[in-house]
Image (spheres, rainbow, N blue to C red):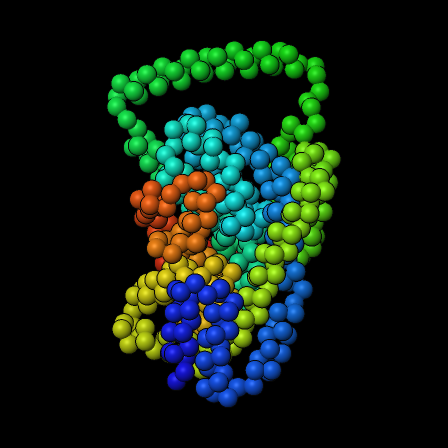
Length: 451
């Protein structure tokens, strides 16, 4: 049984900092040399697996997210949310951050792109309004993971590809967990912000300042409305084109007009002229940067997918799913306990690897186990999405936590406490409800006819 040494080799090389695609190949070599499998056949099988039109969706959504970041669409999305009722108080600025991450994630499909774009825009605003650096970094990291759950999601595309199921069904399976997470993150961050307040005297002074500021703001708005009356709004000020982007993309997918791949291409075609002619923030240089960033990201993802496809095939050949199921059932035969252990395993894997690697590796390994427990594929998709998202912000590894720290300028040590509170009060309840309430994640796939 070479699967155990291969797993140990995978964990060790990732812990010491070997890139994930190379770590997968090293683990594959351990099994291939021990069993005498022809490496050429593994490469052919891996290539045939990733030779799929569906996977074109990934680089296209990556490019769309990069164009949004460089073309001003992300900033306009934030501005539109900030000007709504959500942005009327200091504590609600954190709610704006959460909602903006959800909206941006609905277009980019990537958690890292969401953290990079929204974090760079919102961090200065949050800091000006009294948010601590640690809370800013923790909130951006936790909210950025919404890009995994709000459709269209890159990891749900990978999940559908690996499990050979409907992409649209996987998209809608994570919608309700994503909405619940938005609500719980908003409530928890409000509590954290108010709890970090200082003395009562300072609070009274601050409230008085706020009232004066509101009066001045009301007078300024009244004067501005009077001045703008009868005048046409300047080009580039409206957030409507930015807000229409997720509406057009999701509407075309669920309306049956376009496939997920075609909608991803549409998002690129839409973002370019809007960024060039309306917001006027995309020029040749920013377009070149966006193309290079998207190319690098897509290249890494595709290399990772080839290596993980080879590794997952070897794991399945060595009956790893049966081995894991045997270990779990030897501990307990209770379905609730087994699901708990599987969740812990997925969170740990999420701490060690990025979301795309986890999805493509864990889906073929854990799906037979979930199926034997009576878990539907869309229920499994929602459980996997929430687990991977939580793993990406769970210390000590927490890849998105470190990315958020770099983007927002917060030190990781100051982010740990608020991050743990957000996990306990928002992520864990969402995971528990998603795992043990079957109808929660299956509701939308069922009413839309995917089940």
